[in-house]
Length: 465
Image (tube, rainbow, N blue to C red; front, side, top):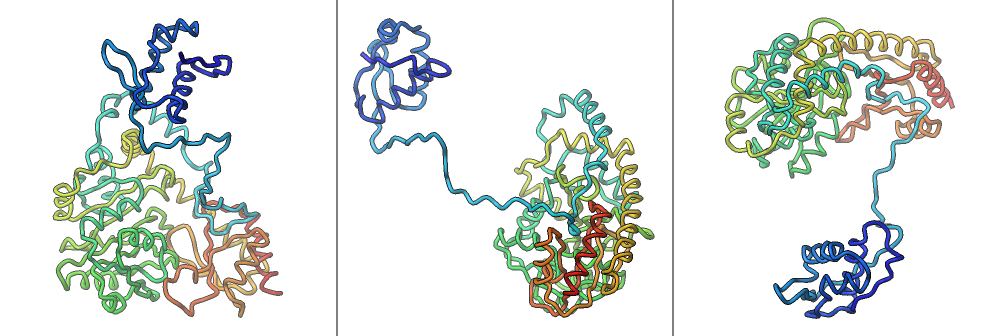
């Protein structure tokens, strides 16, 4: 008869009995085919409920440690090759987690949004109303391309803000642009050669490499990626950000855009991925027409995100596909579930439809315009102004400064980091060796202007050493 010390039991009693019997089986104290006590006998012998024994036996049966024969009883199952896992009071699995982001006294390359600027109260109000009015729809599966209401709201936004005539059914919504890059690879085929801008956003290359894509690099001039550079790569797909290149901030003029479109039309199977990641924040003048709007041959895939305009944590991005590609998407990839929750899709759709998104963008553009001016003034008032040139552009949330120095970028960055100041150098974003040095990226979206001014003085002191 099985007897255990029930004084040791913590939590549910049936779990304690289950664990003790399981341990006895794994340690060989109970052998294969050995009959266990009946529920009634086990309960009577230990002064506990038969229901408790039933629950313990049921759990052991469900996990395959014992089996029952009707009218005969319970028996230990065959468990050859199984080993008992040693339980320890604490686990040490030696998992190499990424290092936590260091804390800086001043971070001049922080592109995050200031939490105080997010419209939490309005978003919460819209979310509550969405839960109340859309309870049924929230529980239904979203179409592969995203819910119709959000796609319609995005199409209206693109029409009013970017002058793009887009059918809502051309839009595919996904959780972040990284996910959408993967869909593009699957749509176009992973046998294609992709060309990215040099310098450029490193994550694009990192994502494509995970799909076994070979990336080529085309240098840029003062007007963006060159036609000759793109052609020389032999690529099939050009991934570019013509409206505000990162990290240089260059905006591609119309003439160069037509050259890139001409490259795409030279050969069947060529496409352009137009990444319009922060187009809402062109601070001077009207937005330049997108490549998608200029394209008459269905060669451009337009991509955008709400990461810059709202917050990266919402994880909602979208792409607009040419008609033949959206048909291919629904024909070949519609088995994918939309990766954005219905709660966020319906809330964002209502947020846009009710005019809150446009008001938020207007408020943020005004804030960022003032923030940019303050940041430039802080640089000009600092000692750093003696040895730097500010390279402005008309859009986005960063600009460049060029430093007059003979010191290496890596040496400067290390000295700044030792003083708890973070700045990114333009040279860090080149994929091939480059002579372009001594340019540094200044993000101002979430910077403390007073701390930034002090950081500029430290920057100068390091250069003067």
